Image 1 (cartoon, rainbow, N blue to C red):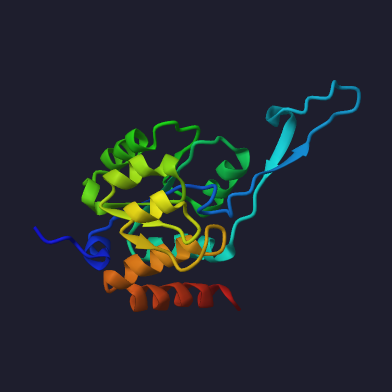
Image 2: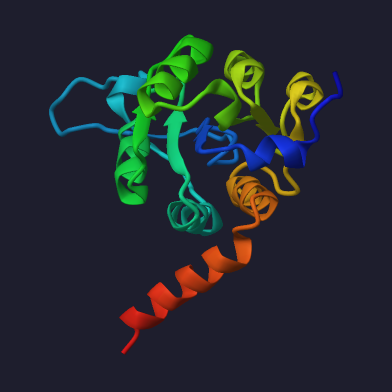
Length: 196
C-alpha cells in the first residue's frame, strides 16, 4: 500500500487537536510569586501565578478553522488557568488539561466528536505528544519539535511553537482541502462588517 502524502492526509481532517506548551507557546513557563501580606511564603508552583505568551497568528488560525468547518481543541499535560482563559477566548470546543496519557485523551475526543482517527490531526512538539500523534490521521510537528517527534510527523510547520506554528498547520489543512481562498474571503468579509 502506498504511503499517504501529507496533503492526502490533510484533506480528510475534520478535527484539529494540539498541545499547548511548545505549540501555542514557545515552551517557556513563567511563574510570578503570589505572596499575600502576612501569609507564609509558598514558593511552590501552587503559590505562584503562571503566565504564558500566545501568538496572535494562532488566535486568527482558530477563527479560520471555524470558517473552514474544522473543530478544534487542546490536550495538555499541565493544568493552567491561563490556558483555560485562552481556550475560552478562542472558543475551543474540546479542552483537556492535566492529561498524562495524550493518546487515550485523543481517542476519547475523537470518539466524542464523532469522527474517525484518520479525520483527526494532532500538533505536538515533545515525546509526551507521540501517543496522540501516532493515532492521528495527520500528525504535525512544530519547527522546534524534538527530533523524535519530527521523525514521526507527516508534516513539520515552517514556524516554531509560539511563533505561529498552529497557523501553519491550519493553512496547510485548509489549502489541502481547497478551502483556503473561500475561508479568507469569509473571514475578511466578516471582519469588514464590524468596522464602521
